[in-house]
Length: 280
Ligand code: SF4
Ligand code: SF4
Image 1 (tube, rainbow, N blue to C red):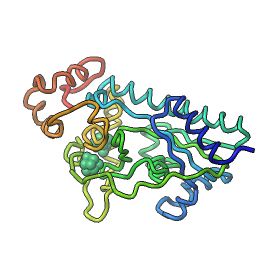
Image 2: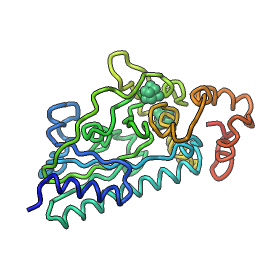
Image 3: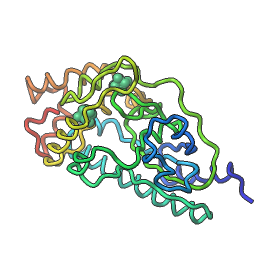
Image 4: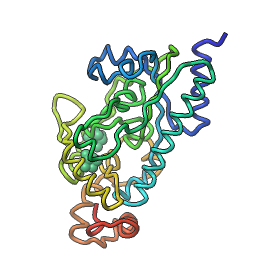
């Protein structure tokens, strides 16, 4: 008879072989113990047999994210979403083949920005699931910051009736409150809070901006994920003085849309999607 450790190891191996960049396990009790997520949005409210939530993460390549808003960023984002949905769907089928009941919650969980504007919440939040599964901590930009990729990761959650060994939650906040995300948000949708790491988030302003970007085939914005200094992916791409470049980008491109410092990003924004004057 297979132990829960053996099953957990096989799930991890399956996820790595299937292309996930990270995987974490959260017992459903964490939602009740922490008590931050309203009861109707917890795993057992959505699917009663759930005992463990398995969260899979797919990273977004930093140099692509840096071109946002652009057709490259849009296509990478859509590909990450399709990859997550395939991972979630296929892991459910894998678990069922092992005799384990399972269920998954698709990576976004809303049909359109218009619908999200009317009711600005999904039935299940992957950010909290990723936090409970030990994959990262929440930052001022309201995203999960991970040690490997900062906030440049997207998540999907799979619920199973199997009781599996949980991952330890990360205790130390990864957000350093540098405020770069707040300063670079094009619609001032983020505000620092002294009393907590998660900043105030004006979802209405962010959504309006996304509706405009969608019409121009340059969805999503993602600037608050691009500029966050957290993540080992920055070491891989060996960037120097990059925060200054991010912070000056808006002003520099308003003064000169052809500024050579930003040429590799503006070249991508200029073609393939409509952009007012190809600043971000
Ligand atoms: S996605 Fe863009 S508009 Fe929304 S909060 Fe982040 S930087 Fe601001
Ligand atoms: S950019 Fe700075 S303040 Fe914003 S989430 Fe990242 S570390 Fe935190």
